Amino acid sequence: MADFMTNYGIIICYILLAVAVLTAVVFPIIQLIQNPKGAKGALVGIGALVVVLGISYALSSGDAAAHLEITPEGAKQVDTGLFAFYILAGIAIISLVYSEVAKLFK
Image (cartoon, rainbow, N blue to C red; front, side):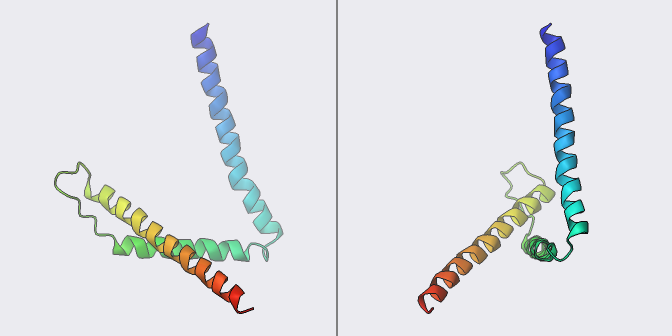
């Protein structure tokens, strides 16, 4: 009985996951088609993120220390993630400081 419940529970979880993924993909596309002007900001943000990831990938070396058990591809992915984090954190800090300084002069 326990195996029966476990198997069907896992199947139900997979079905619910598929419905959630399908919903998360389909409804933004429908919204984009219905309101293309409203999606302009989102597309600019996605484009900026792609640019940051491209710059991060170009900056990453992929060199791993000899004592680490990681492939060069894995090291490049980790490097890319770290550089992307540094760039995005820097942008966030700069925009935070800018908004506070701009408030002072208003």
